[in-house]
Length: 262
Image 1 (cartoon, rainbow, N blue to C red):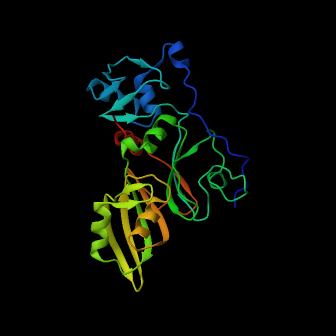
Image 2 (cartoon, rainbow, N blue to C red):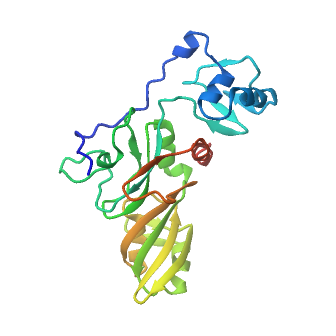
């Protein structure tokens, strides 16, 4: 098991200095190549075809940009060119608390992510008894949008519950259930499998209230014995091993930005 980290410190988004623009910026094709979009020659072709925008304007060959501050899109997809920004997906194990370090000495996220050049923090939470997909980043703007209820980013869970599950349960969840802190409802629900008195169900919702999935299923008479988050917006847990992380691709990061566009 990796060694414990010191007490938690919330990581702010990197301070955006304008060092590149002080020197006149960097050529756009070089910035795109450094971000892994394409080779410099291919990036020049993208620019020449009008498929690249910088700060909302169609780019031209010869343009220079500040890779830290510029908002760049290629074929309509946001491209992150600030090399200090980190985007990770983690498969959080059961029993690990959703904090970077725990004052009570419990296993925390930082025990699993190793040493990173940039300090990251978690986007939202999973309770200690739940497991699965957790996003980590130091991009404060994106993290805020992903967590804010107004952007309605869907989250999907696989739950092991008391079974069997009658068809009417799904209709109730989709119609809405009254909880002690207000109504809540599922966006999608299906029974995946049933074995004896245990069933696996998949449930998707926008909600981010504490223990919302457990409370919803308990309210309809099917308490949860195991809960795994399998998807956040366009990002899936996939085959990430328990306790491991992976970096999101440029395509995945672009998909996250699309999910929270205003």
